[in-house]
Image (cartoon, rainbow, N blue to C red; front, side, top):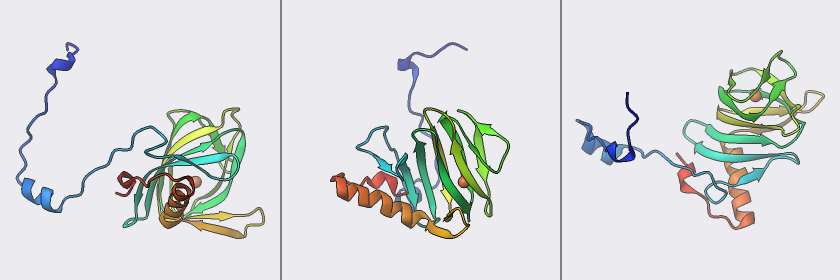
Length: 174
Ligand SMILES: [Fe+2]
């Protein structure tokens, strides 16, 4: 197979029997560029930040990147929905499990799982996450501190934008 030169690429006109219907009733996909204007790092506690990628209020889905900046912990939380995660940089583990995730590791979390995220890496960890439903955060005595769902994350993002004078990015609302 020969490597194509850029001039070899062209847009293919794909047959679509429902083209008009899709234009009228379909929903457009989104694009969020890799800069602070399109989606800023919103502080999450003292040692972490979240960069939001998508909010789906119909399905209670949130797409984001969690960045724990240095060795630290994200307190014990229980999931009420599924979470798909990919480790992008650094490493992390859960106190409750026997593995350590490095870049490229895929983690699939299920409703009912409760765990405590720890990173021992000097540079912390960056994790892409696509999460559904609520996350319940608990203190060290097992008392519920907060319930975090799409509305909590949306408020987190929009409050920060307002405070910083950053326009809300409509591309994040899928
Ligand atoms: Fe989790």
